[in-house]
Structure formats: C-alpha cells, structure tokens
Image 1 (tube, helix red, strand yellow):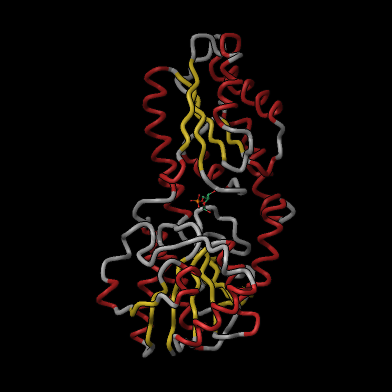
Image 2 (cartoon, helix red, strand yellow):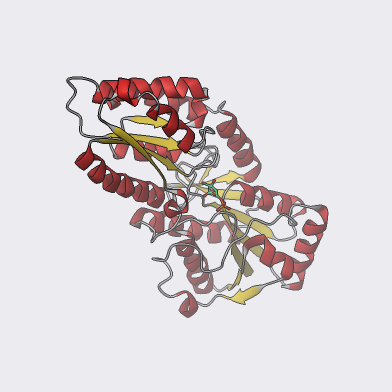
Length: 352
Ligand code: F6P
C-alpha cells in the first residue's frame, strides 16, 4: 500500500510519535509511507513528502508536529472535497491516516464517504473532547504542564498569601481543568458544562475565598482553575471578586494567569508517546485489513467498539465517534454526567 499520514487542527504533544510509528512500522511491513504537510491544506495542494524511518529519527520526543498543521476552511466545502479526492488520486494513495481532533475526524469521515482510499483516524487533541476516546493523544502532557504551572503559581501565591485564578485551554470541554485542578490541589474548579451564570460563579468563588481566607483561617493560598469553556472572561471574574475582597478575604489579593498556548506545547509525556505509538500501530493493522472510516481509540478493555490485538486499543466507526462527540459537547453524554457528579461530590472537600 501507499499510505499517507497528516496531522490537522490544533497540534498536540504525541502527534510526532504517531507519525514516526506510521513511517517505521509502515515501512517495516512493506508499505510506502508519505507525509502530507500542513494538514488538509497541504492535501488540497498535494504537498507530500517521503517519510523514511531515517527522516523521522528522534521525533518522538518533540512537541508540536513536524508535518505542520492547519485549520482548513476550504477542505469541507464541495470544491475542497473534489480537490482533495483529485489529489489522493494524483498521489497514487491507497490509504490515509488522519491524526487530529474533532474537526479533523469530521473531515476524515466526510472524505471517506465514497471511500476514495481507506481512511483511519487517530484522536489527538489536548481538549479530550472526542467521543469514545478515553484519552486522546496530548491530553496527559497538557495536564502535566498545567499541574507544573499551578505548582509554580502556588509557590509565589503562598509567599504573598494570594488567590490566583488560572485559565486553561479546552475549548468547550472542562476535562483539562477538572483533572489538573484535582492534581494541583485547586480550591475550586470552574467548567462550562455546569452552565453557571456570571453571578452564580461570583457567588461560588466568594464562598471559596471566605472559607479559605476568612477570619481565623490559616490557608496560605487559594488556587482556582477555570476552564476556557466558561465563557465569562477571566479578567472580568477577577475584577468582580476584587470588589468584595475587603469583606471576603481582608488583606488578601487576587491575581489571574491565562496559560493559553503554553499548555499545548512541550515534549510529550511517556504516556502520550506510548499511547500515540500503540494507536498508530493498530492503525496500520486496521488499514491492512481494509477497515475504513474508523478511529482507533484508547479505551479500557471491554469499552465501546471492536477489540484489536492491543487490549487498550479499540476500533470505533467515525460516525459513532462524531455522534458521541456531539453528546459530550451538549452535556447529554453519560460520560459528562458522571464527570460532573464525581466533581460535585469532591467540591466541598476542595476548600478544606
Ligand atoms: O483544540 C485545541 C485548542 O488548543 C483549544 O483548547 C483551543 O480553544 C484552541 O485549540 C485554540 O486554537 P488556535 O490555536 O487555533 O487559536
């Protein structure tokens, strides 16, 4: 087979480990492998380069994506779809591996509708907002980066007895804030799925400040993790809390930090490298079996989808992935309900 691989959408740590595995195991199993540069944008231009094992040596440890990425506006249009199909043909491809998040997997499903080549997707997005994907490539590194950043912020916060509101990426999904918040000993975690109004958020945080910093309280810092999925701007929330500080936490100051793209970069953790490699390896096997329009998912044994030879990797049709993704984002998925239930139970303990 002639197999192409592309990375698309927001880059995530571990994408390079997946690319290298496709190149090395593809070649080792007798296939020709090419890399498409700049995601679907590059596909529209037929921008392919040979991917030999020597050329991808040592890229596993690198953050970002050596192939480059893009968010293509043209690819989903009828004109873009026709151009992409023409380029698949012109490049003489038999198969395509798409590594990316929601938008990229939606694109893979669209392109695969009439099976121009065999297509599989690998979930890669720091947001962890992809249906039937327990852990996407990049999530673990992003969580570790947030926790490390919060530890540093906590050092300086403790020195001055301050409160910090730290905003983290995640688009419409609160997963990063939830997981990192627990690990960093946050005193409150704000996530969009809870759909609190601005006034409700302010009330909740005032309670937290009073409990931690009120008269007789010995706490040295307050850490509040706020997900990007909460639409109230972080600076605005901080300002509103500042207006009540004299009453809620006398003598204490509150500051804000937006971690932004810092959370998306950096060398991938060992877990991200390993799961990216195992998903990619299973992807090559799926292509060899002619399995089309699916995502390889990092799921517990017995989870959704069909099993593979790897007990942690399952095969899920992209149509099912995209349906479940919608449910994750509108909050109707049992996965979200369970996450919120567990976090609500922990909420009272966070301020202790
Ligand atoms: O989807 C990954 C992500 O990093 C989100 O967390 C964030 O909202 C978005 O991408 C930012 O995208 P961009 O870098 O294109 O502005």
